Length: 115
Image 1 (cartoon, rainbow, N blue to C red):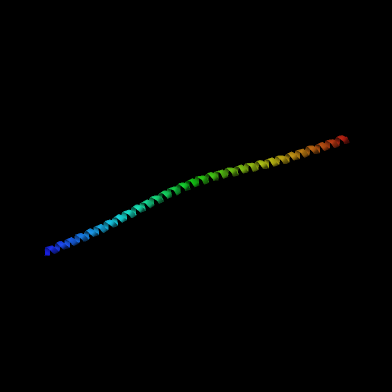
Image 2 (cartoon, rainbow, N blue to C red):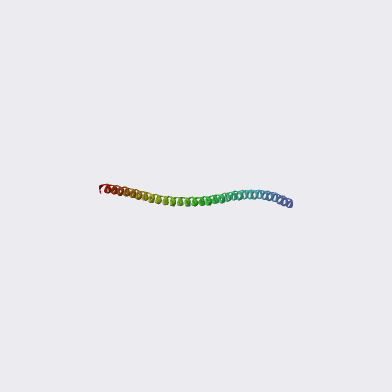
């Protein structure tokens, strides 16, 4: 009877151990699924980060290009302003020369008729 009882206890322990083993296996499977889901999520985030980094790099290059274009445009405006000032000065000098020639002509006409 003691041997039967021991066998029965061992049988109960075996059933209990099997149930515990099954429960632990299910927990492990759930943990594996969770880890896989997290790995997939991480890969997606990593891909997004890579894309964002690429987009940022492209934006920086575009900004540098626009900045260079702006600097060239500013230099061009400066050159054109200098040219405009030079031409205005030439125009004033030309007007002055024309006025001088006209005055000399009047003077010559005046002294010619008076002389």
